[in-house]
Image 1 (tube, one colour):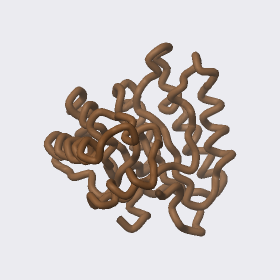
Image 2 (cartoon, one colour; image 1 turned 90 degrees about the horizontal axis):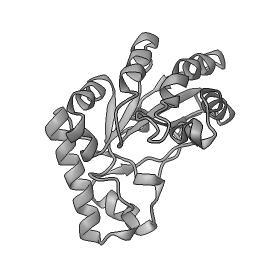
Image 3 (cartoon, helix red, strand yellow; image 1 turned 90 degrees about the vertical axis):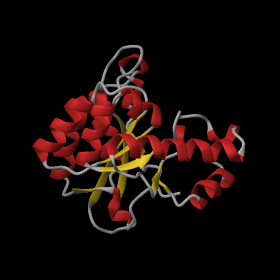
Image 4 (cartoon, one colour; image 1 turned 30 degrees about the vertical axis):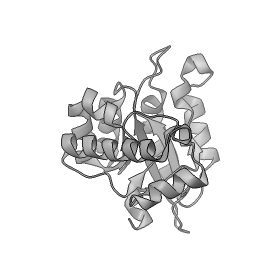
Length: 204
């Protein structure tokens, strides 16, 4: 499991999980384009089927990875079911975007065991976690704000930092805190001497 890019250079990899909805995608892509910041996106099969246009836009902009088909708790599934989740997710992502997500994989909920990690690796994937979760997905109803998102990213800054953000809105308050905070995240990291990379920096 990779939780940071192995480097001594001041670089950060911004990663966005796409599983629930795509409410923040337009704002996120607008910021990334305007600031010329590369990024990586983890898509589920459910997401690409529900939001094919947004999925194609993300795949056209950055590096994509596999986030399973239905975002289950993989450790509760049989080996065959785990493999099906991974392969069905990849098939849906490839069918919609025209791009294979292999070899990048992210476990739903960040949950894995040595066994599920071995299964995913055996399918040709590198599992990528994160250095910091912004918690923007919790929304204002979960005690978060754009300010807390920025603060968490900056507090965890280190060469090779992998930042976990989400493209969807909170289901309760419909906030898109990661999207709202993104311009400030980018400017603050740059002010601290950091530049941005995709997960291609992992050498995969």
